[in-house]
Length: 526
Image (cartoon, rainbow, N blue to C red; front, side, top):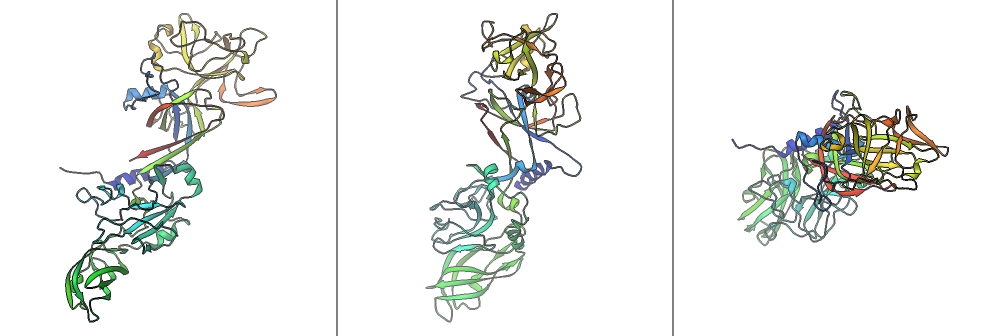
């Protein structure tokens, strides 16, 4: 049987997702954004990269196998708080000379919006943001028999009136809805989207919400002017008290006739509780003659304009914002080519306890030191994304790739795509680095010679005496490392494969520098 999932279901899902960040009832959810997938053009490891990733990033795939691969390439994470999410709608700037759609409750598959031919209200151009980041609903776009689809807007809507403001020069009527705060402009406003208020009805928005009246008529459109109208005052007159009929009460209008035709109409009293309304103008008792006039009474949304901003504006998208700047958990000097969202990852070594820190790393780390006396860590450089290996036992070799190396602290972070288990050098297994064996480095796909750089270019060994600490003191200054080291090694903050990856976006690689800050804005559409 024919069926649909309505837009209201999508709006409800957006609301549920937004509220889940602060918990619903006794449920607690922790969401994190993450940056991932360094060196995406490296295709020597099975199921890792593709050679043309930079120019043509592949479409993300959705499967249990692929989910595991996403974990393999994860670098670091940033917690999403309730202040980092907002429901958003498409950005429609007010521009002089544009014909906007007006709010109507009957746009559908058989009755598209005149300007955009949109089959739903939410896809039409029925609101606009002015140059002061104030958002207005188009109550009337100047439509009449001469301009049945509306007129060009030439007056920028302004002000914060709780009732619609009419502009005589272009026939438009705009209703102020809300203003976007400066902090929201920075975090949630893009070229494509603008936020809606997070708490409708709070002190900043209560005037608009409280002014809403269920079934209150705001505008009436002339669709046919009729002809031959006259009253005792002749063929030009203003007829007051014209009743708005239907299932509501109290609605009246004033109809102005000029030379026997309907020239204009104003709502005198919008009444209340209308879900269906009409005007039978030809039956007005004050008319002596005339017929053919048609007037369309526009029905407001449930409970009136301004009562529910999310339903009225179609807020079924959510923007998630994260800012990656300077933090000990973040990798510097490498690139990333994947952005994602993960729900409820657990702490390393635990399947139950949720990660609940502001940042986290998914990388293993080694605190290195020179094997030769008299040398220091600053003399050796392990290039990012080069292959490292270590003999960790009889016939057992650990293999990974350099995510980052800080020659000042001697801390090397590495990642191990599961495809490394297909390499003969690793014994067709994937094992962690451990012990005190030398950590060698070669360029992937090279001739097997060392790729170490720096003054000494000497392979180093794990510092087994660097134990039970997450800081290092250099030159009298304590430096946070972001991970706790034991015998020279540090585990990730998160348990690999824990949690649910709910969003993935592949993109051309972006290299992170020490002075660089990334602002990630992810729009999830329900």
